[in-house]
Length: 119
Image (tube, rainbow, N blue to C red):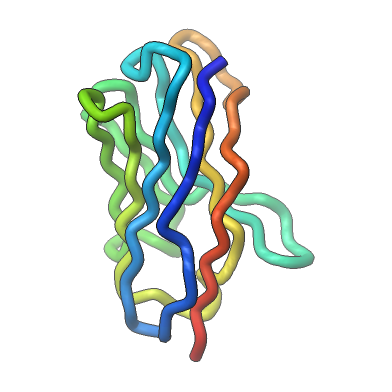
């Protein structure tokens, strides 16, 4: 399994921006699809965005479309989540996760980074 470390979370005012990073180690990064997930207090974890191994295919949950952008740099073993026009409802712990090619389960997870949006 690949090891994942998120960074870039913090406190931001509504309408502001943050960029989350997730650095991977211990595996061949391009063999993994990557995803960003979030969990707010009292709520279930939800998928925010995913990206294929090449970066050629992405998915966004409806609530973040047009505001968030997922990208990856396979040379740097890093996946990013650019978050713009942040809203209070984006407040959550954000996790990155990796899914091995040919599998359906995200089985490597980071420790999470807190994003708090003040209104």
